[in-house]
Image (cartoon, rainbow, N blue to C red; front, top):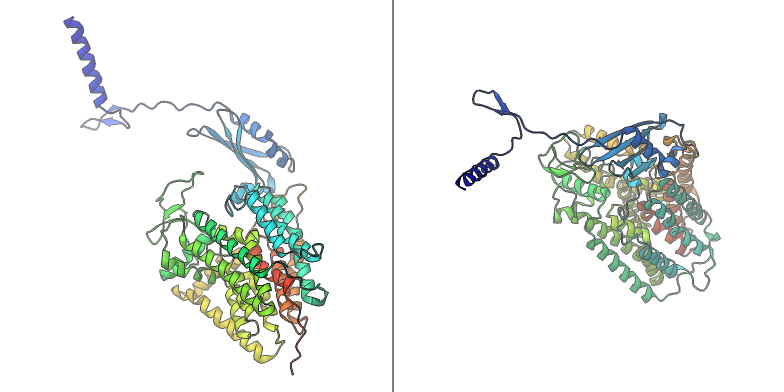
Length: 580
């Protein structure tokens, strides 16, 4: 018995000694540098599937197979195995089209877990992520259809529902059909479906602007003013509450505004100063896709990257300065209260401007109708919930329209709007000649105000040590980038995919762009004696035409035109005033 106990004691002591000595995780050397132990490295499990088998499974996947039918047979392929996740990543190329499909295949089950084709390969926002823009609640069918119905019922003439104006309102809402396809990742179909409403509204508002007497009577909503006002207040509370409750809904556009304002407050121009990834040292965790956005920047701070955030005009960053002064910025792409505050503020400013315009040109009923239209339109809520800068430009233009009798106010508003979103430059000739024609004194006052506001906006470039270098960076990072960028979110850039059955419309886009320039010149001259209705309708037509000609178009741009479409539909006609 004693012998047995002795043996057991020796075994226990040996086990304790082995447990006390940690397993070697690297080569072990003695005091003289001689190798005495090497770590045990178990061999990683080999993949169950072969590369050829994985590629075959991916190419046979219905979504991938349907897209590849547009290309010649036998495309170039590649598949790499990730031992950590036990998955294969597959890439497919086809001639001049480049990479046409990519996805992930599970080595364990042999199933295709991700499949992206065409525009989805390079554009993650083309993959149809639910709630990526606008949030899941707003873009849910019950809420979206409810807002759409409220917008239509609130503005339609219930005594005469079968009118052209009812059709106009339905066309404004029809962008929701396109959005449904966009949310499913079908961006070719969504771009095609967004084009007819843009064309219709551009033609319709241009027709009203050039022939205002052809428009039927005003036909304002028959609802009591107090009912429209109460509904507007409810909608404003709903929208603001939804925005505040959904803290992490700031997309890259609003994030860029916060970064730019932070740079200005630090004494730096925002152009060329956005946080980047490049080869900078990581300082944060990897995302679900393995990308590490948080990097140590040149200022020594850990910041989340947004390399193309400096593509907007200077006013788009100056507008965020007050909120960043109050709330600051952590350097991370987090809740960003400054972005929420700015988005809410300019949404409310646009609404307040419409109230003032309505009271001046049509009284309380028109004011209530315009404010209700802004608050009930689903796409203004869509921009608000995405916390973008897309309400800034229309808010400035609406306030400029309220003061349109003054050339100084028009010139200032045009400049500030244009240096927020460059699209507003297209209305400058129209606003220049409104009620003044080519009278030198009026032209000089407009031009002086435009130049003064421009100088004020671009003064942030003086924060750069070299003004010439700052101007060059501004051009390179903004207008040059916008003119050269590729995008699948309009019908014009489909030629880059070289896919059978999808037309290349680049030549037609050039014709449309030239037509927009011609329209801007004609609208500045005709009709000669413009009244507020003509100014509103032609402003809407020019902005809609500009959007129609864009390579990169978004539903977030619809708030740019909504105030002036509503004014074109509801503003009363006035007789031209003949001045001595």
